[in-house]
Length: 193
Image 1 (cartoon, rainbow, N blue to C red):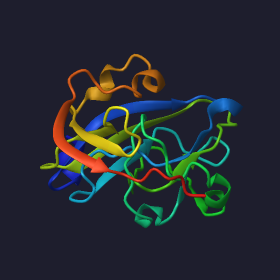
Image 2 (image 1 turned 90 degrees about the vertical axis):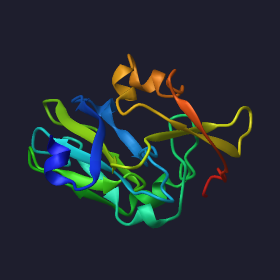
Image 3 (image 1 turned 45 degrees about the horizontal axis):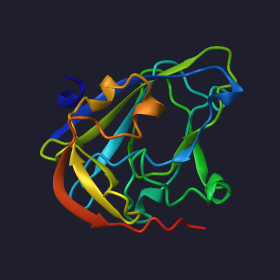
Image 4 (image 1 turned 60 degrees about the vertical axis):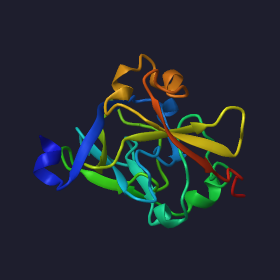
């Protein structure tokens, strides 16, 4: 219902609650969220809603503005990040978004962002959802066989991540019911230095 109230012609898929523990090990290093649609045709977004006020101390969201415009990338748990080697450069451009509980941040899934450790005394829960155009097939990408520069697009169910037992372990594999779209893409995974 939330998406229908606030987004025209868009839908929310794979909504989940993420809980950041109060721990120095809770950092989520800079990254781009995975593709959710064919970004040559559709934009896709992450909707991030903290359930408590977020601060730098409790590991709020940081983002490098306009980095979604750096160029097209293909992103999933099984594909390498082309920006993996430039963390110290990106760090100079990260801006914190301290957000009040219940307010929302909507950002392009291609924007470079991170969340530093939660040094607060309590966990920091957030609700996160992927927002895609209502007519866009929900997609993920994976290497085509042993190739390291050819990938394939797969249609996935709107709730496929809801079935993971362990997000970080299960996400590197395609869901059992993923369907090849027939689209093969030559992608340059040369890491930016």
